Image (cartoon, rainbow, N blue to C red; front, top):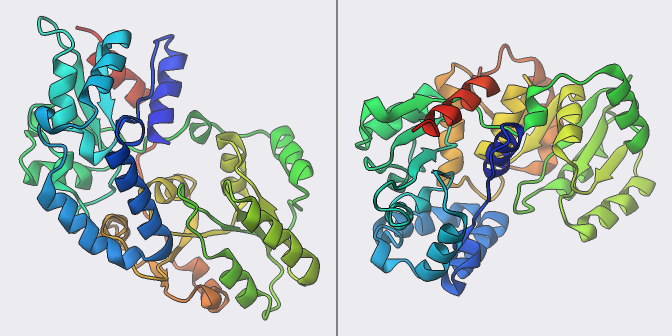
Length: 353
């Protein structure tokens, strides 16, 4: 989502851009590692503590001469010949930085790192930090402090705030909202709760709904199913048998997600940086799905919630979410800088050499 957000800014500035995913496209071994990460996240999140520690130790992508598929990466980069490279992944900031700087030795492209972690913690990878990068930026000062502690020069650091898709910075008018409600058969007069699905399809929807079915709540439940037609069909079947109003949705665009968040009373999902940033930016309460354990990176985002003076509500048993809905009105929620124009100006500055 962050790469897409940057590309949308470039499109608005009439700047040509491409998105490369070398850990998914340039090597079968790296692709296996990506699938393994996704599998762990879906089924055994607590196991990721071991995988994360191994990745920290192994440093698979720290040197250009160790990068598998480097020729393919350089072929794509030379074909595009960029003036600026922005990394949004922890494992693209060392060996891939070296490769990027080889494109034009007389005037190599600038290399910036945007780290989406909201705060420091056991899941803040050392691989995010490379003092050779031209800029390190992140959503919060806590992100910057974590990078400086790991060796990033303070003069190269900048708080950018949340890096969101363009729709999340825009207010939606009544016509758009009504059209959205009509499209998905949502009653704007009733409360709305969202069961979110992570980018990798991680969710506890069925357990939550079975728990909610035993309670008399007047909330419409919007269940985001991502790309899973199996889950969507299962929830459609559940919809016809349950007394609660369940509206399963397949992947929706950023504009619809923004409207849905604005309408919602609460969101239930894993404490990933992307979803957590979107929910906080919308000023909504979030119940954190910590069933099957917490991944190291997720702990960083929970630390941000705590460091802002608010204890996160962790749901270890998804079926018991209904018992925790009373926590919905617990004071204020964390604040997050949301300033797209600041990011636009920073990208212009990086390109002005």
